[in-house]
Image 1 (cartoon, rainbow, N blue to C red):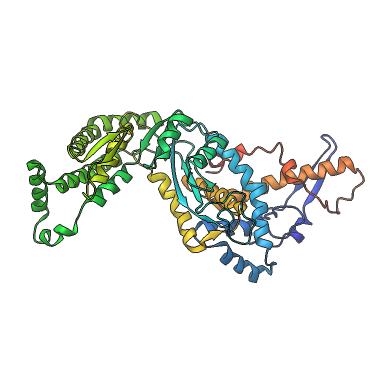
Image 2: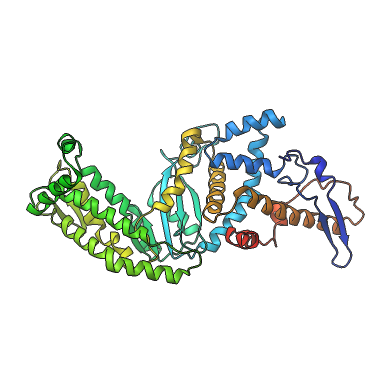
Length: 458
């Protein structure tokens, strides 16, 4: 790592162009600049820190490594990480969100992450309004899209109001919202987004599995072959006498659906239109008949067990193992089937759930974040990290190239402004105050979005 920049910045060569009355800087190849001029820690130190954090290493452990290696002050790294988020990560993340706000299919899920300030604890100043639990909302596109992304946004709570606020601020306007069965999402999809709602098939399957009592038959089935076990369940299903047999059949049907879905892969040179056409053909010919049979079985378990009240299905009898699965299905019935009509829509939230896993690993090791600003920094970095991953580009190399370009743009702009105001300024002297947010005006952040960067470098 190029970890100390003070000596390196002294060899930046400033060239004053009389034709355009601007200053141009020539930076040595292979030198990574600091976040701000006059700082001494290079950006590559921060990028490696972020890389470790996104792979589950808490910031305090990373900090202890750099404190010993680079002899940094106890709060140097944390201040630099916040500076990087403010001047580099945040504007790039905002540009990314602006580019994908019209994504046609949006997948959403949330996970807990304690922010002590939001929960009225810790050493930071408590938030004006505190909650018992804070969250991160993860949003993603469909994996096959040409501009795949993952975005993480901090939420003080899991309320519908918090989710609505994030989607409104990001100006997301999808045609379809894919989520789990959390009750806030159908209203958000219909009322706020004017979008169709698809419920995750995996979450429905979990309800089915909870209702199944495998242990009851474990000893008996040890003596039987697979064919005999299958014959046993289908015999029960045919006689209509066993709820568990029906649930086992539903579980198998869901497995068959996933098998059929996984048969259709997008070829590397195939257009989205061609790929989606093949998906639709497969669903209409093979998947829909299974979903129709599944629907018949699930509805056969409703008699005397559930009823509809005020537009929602509720249980009439408590304690029956299959009731929750039946109620869940009946309330989500139409939204579980929408993917059959639209080949762009996945039948589950697996894409965004996979994206959440690195964050949950860090949460297990780091336990919490102190401040809201710290949470927002974490979300921006994870957004860039996971979006780089789904686009197939190297996170550190991408941000090194981007950081060098943005630093150069602001450095030249700062010196140009300084020499116009003070024509006689010695180029060997420092500029003591840098307004990087103002100097970044005019920088083309869209050029550095991962899919555009990939086109130039791969």
